[in-house]
Structures are given as structure tokens and as C-alpha cells.
Length: 441
Image (cartoon, rainbow, N blue to C red; front, side, top):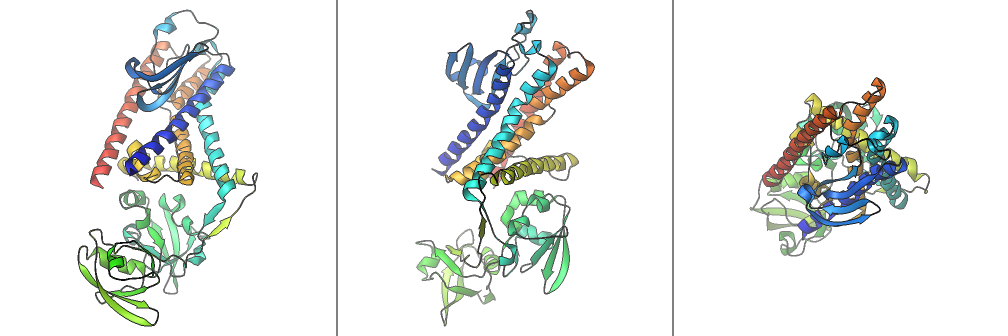
């Protein structure tokens, strides 16, 4: 069932993004009197399609190949590679008959809609739900660094007070792009002394392997919250509110201390010592194969705060979030180009998006948040100066505007083929990388 939910969310999210992106091209083309012959969600490769209908000289349909979508604009070399139509005399309703500036607007129409959609989604989410965050001062016991955090020099109980000299107000700032994009400096309070921890430029490589929680998480006491029915903890008689203090005689007052012991004793029985009121008790419990006992830690000491926004006040906040996600993606891409982050760690395809982003439970807030992020990522991807992408077409149009004459049809045909080869190679790489990650993890 989880897999079906993942697939359904992925298809719905991508369908919204693709249809609206292509609608941007469609509307701008129509605005300049350019004929649009086809409007398709997914590709009708080799003429196969799931559905189609013709209305006012335009064919609307759904293809069978879910690798995107397209609008076929008359008089333009596009995904269809229909070059025969270009041999006929130029007609006034064709793309090639229009001034370069109009054609440039048509090419950027899809990206513009994706940016507007991303801003709109974050605007509405901010207006309806506000911003809920964990104040950094609520981390009474500091942070609990995971594998990644310990590798860069963080220690349990550290209190991160500044990032690059700026005071930390919210806990999520510690796990933000300002830190994870590397080359950042954390000021931590450790045993009453202020120390500096430098985050390396390639930290995203290890975060990709282990997950964000293995960087830093709030440090909690080993106090039991909710217990899973039928779990080892439940069968052993542990109750909500019990405070674990040791496991096999080793101190386990804090959640990270207990986790470290459990991970080293998977499938083994441990003597768990805990406090229940004024009573000190010990009971044997067998850890599971993944090193857990079947309960959640009590998080009541972590009190979040929510900041509400009026309808119009939420707009700049939402726009800031949307723009921030776009610039973060651009910075991440730059790190791949520089060789600081491996492409296999940075790029995710549909399998990883469904599995790690949307997930197996349907949560509308999460769904729209991820869709908003993907809308901005799609805008950035389409702006890349690769032939066959909107950015490639835009570059050629800018060259035409500078030269004062269009590039030859033969050049455009060859550039389109090169672009297809590049995109096909990237698609194979991304899908292969997704499948490799799914099986190895």
C-alpha cells in the first residue's frame, strides 16, 4: 500500500507541474497568435497515446511515456523533430514568423509559470499554517550528532550558538542549506567553552548516504513516550513516562547514548535499568534486528512555536522560501560542477523523489510542500543552456537578437539532436542511480 501511495503522489505532483509548465508555453504562444498543434501530458512516443481529443485545431492528450510533456508549436523545431513542415513557406501564424523577443517570451513561459506556482504554493501554505519551528533555546540538552555530525567534530551536548557569526534562533537553521552546502563555521558551546567547528564543502556526500538525522538532532533524555503495541518494550512492561538510565550497566540517560548501545547489540537481550516514579527497576529486553525496543522518546521538552501571517504578509515570506529553494538548487548544482559533491549523491530521479520525498503516507501539507520545491527545481532545470530545454532555446534566441538574424534550421536540428542525447544520457544516469540506491539501501 505504501508503494501505491508513493506512486500516486509522484504521478499527481509531476502531472500538475508538467501540465502547468506546458500551459505557460501554450498561453504565451496563443497570446502572440502562434498556432499550437498538440498539448500533451507525457509523451505519445511512436504515435501511442492513452487519450486524445481535438478542439479548435489543437490535439489534447495523455501519452504513455511518463517522462514529461510537450506542446507542439507550429513552425518550431521541438521534441517532435518534425522538420518537413519547415520546408513549406513561412506562415504568419507560425513560431518562426514571429519576432525573436516574442519567441523568447514563449520559450520562458513554462519556467515563469513554474516559478509563479512555487511562490503561490509556499504563499498559501504560509498563510494557512504559518511557520512552526523549534527555538534553539529549547534544546536544553544541546544536540545529538549522528554519524555525519561526529565526523565533522560535533559532540553530544554541544550547543550551536552561531552559524558564520550569526546567532542561531531556530534549530532548523543548523540543518539548513547555509550549513549543508559546506564551508560554513559553527560556533558551539562545549563544557562551558566556546569552540569552532568547520563544516567541509563535501558534507552533502555523507548526508546523502546517512540522512539528515545523522547530521544533528535535538538531544533528548531517554524518557519513554509512546510505545508500539506488541513491541519488545510493551511485552517487557515498560510504560510511558519511564526514564531509562542504563543498558547492560552502561549509562544511557540520553537518547543518543541508548541508541549507540542498542545498535551494538542488535538481536541481543539487554538489561534495561529505568526509573518509574521513585522506584529503580531493571528488566531484560531483546533489541530488534534494527537496534530498537519499540517506543518513541518523549519530546515534550521540545516546545515548538508557531508564527502566523496575514494573507498579504504571507506573500513575501512564501516568495522568500520559493526563491531560497531555487538558489539552493543552483548552489548545489555548482558544487557538482566544481567536483565538491558527487553527482550520484546530488541528483535524484522519480524513484528517489517518490521514496524519500513524498513517502508512503498521504499528507497534503507535505505533498504541496514537496510539489512547491519540485516546481522551483523544474524551473531551474529548464533554464539550463542545454539544447532541447527551454534554456537552450532561449540562448539561441538571444544569439539571434544580438546577430540580427536567426540561426540556420540545419544548426537548430543538429542542436536539438545533441540536446536529446544529453537529456537521454542524464535520464539513464538518474534512473540507474535511483535503482542502485533503492537496492543498496
